[in-house]
Image 1 (cartoon, rainbow, N blue to C red):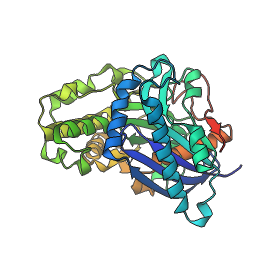
Image 2: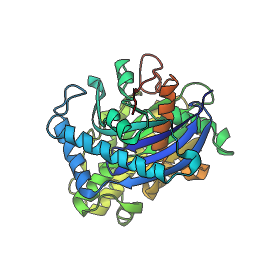
Image 3: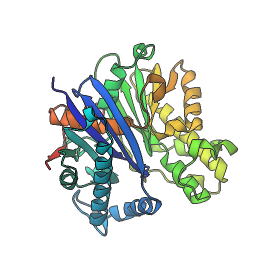
Length: 374
């Protein structure tokens, strides 16, 4: 099996910056981890991306770029290119010649029921700017085969689950949880394909809440929530959303859940309540899994919120399951999504499936991605 070295780039629904990681893999099981980094967007640029979500609502065809979206796409791409150049320049010699870049871009619209998903990012421009082939637009082929176009990380999560150190490696079924702006889960059985879907809001509502009510971009370490309590009737109303009754595959847009139900809460109570919603939404996903998991592995920025992890741990313990964060298993929870995009780029280059009927609802296992040469 061929081994390729790939850089992964991820700018998620939190819209806070660019995650970058490099790895070497056969696209199946063998993974050698390289360095990773995260570069924050400046506040003004983040606000510009947030504003673009409203403009993007006018998109009816995937290539449409109304308003200033074309210029924003170029600026996002150039920022990614600068990050790649700086990252490669600082790599140890053995990592300095990557074969590929896996480029996610910035999601500004996701409407799976319309077969429409839009990520701002010009793969051709990125390839020219970096001199490295780029694999991008990895969701479109899945949606053309009836899939949700998300989540795409399950193929990577499944590979990680197969390589977990003991005692965790023997704890199957296992679930990888990525708590980003939106949370998604990957259920990995002892045998067979993974099962995956978006489980609900992750950090996005918390970030929106503390930004609006407290003037800060996120609740660092759950400090604001530590001063408040869970308002159970508000949490219950969020969790009564019909989304949670749907079986997977299913996926969410950043705007599918809003702050409307949290109006009139105090700042700290709102932050604590929304953290509880994030955790309980993940726990509710068990209702749609083949078996109750024995292990939960939490990745993404939400693993740094002790209230999300604590509530998840308390709920999982009721079923005898163990909850760990990525670092407990020797993984880098900050780099997981960027690593996934590197892994998926390799799978795309090798013609391997990126998605499965059990992860996105596609009609058959589907490879995908568009390759751009420098």
